[in-house]
Length: 215
Length: 101
Image (cartoon, rainbow over all chains, first blue to last red):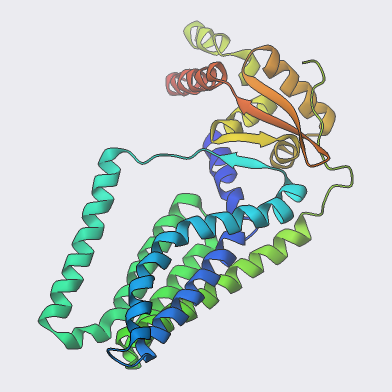
């Protein structure tokens, strides 16, 4: 008997088969890590530090668009000629879900702000807190799409974050280091997936396109 | 038992066929997919896939658009509204049938 849910899940998971999203995201994380590191290294009160700090918001806001375009560009050249073109439905989150996400984000942000305001030394916990938050996000994604290597990335995120805090690399430099190391792990995971994908999916000689003629 | 058989007989025969059911399931979660993608995901031969898609198109369940990507021909397939409703109804009916038996 055909398992419809399994087919639907497998279809959604096929988006991640080529590892291209991870490679693009990983590169962005490494870039973000470098940015934060530069921000931390810039002399306090310097123009460079202020500029990096202001432009940081712009980098975060534009990340989604840039990563999306890079992934689309790479898929057009690598994935679609090998395993075919597919456009997934863009699901708009329901107002209830959007409100819940905003509330969760706001609560996490506010708790961190209060925590750091009360105790500046708590800033050393930044990589650990960030690592654990990323780990939870990766686990949720792994369970949703059923990609096993996302569980490994979740563990890597937690280990890197907690490890940096334990090693005393707290605050902004440690935060930057977290993104750099986690980004490298995400790139490696994406590259491994891409190598397997390329081995398993050679380009069809005839382009692979055909279809019913009666229309 | 006869009631159960009625439930089975009521199932949409276009969608009930395993290959077409797999196609409907794939197309239900995507906006559109090309011929190569559907072939890879279902493991069907080109001839078989063409034949099943033609049957689904005839029933008004899929729309097939033949276009080009650069110079390469591209056959894009998407589930129509009628196809989406039929798939949804099939799932509900089949689930009900399984619960009864």
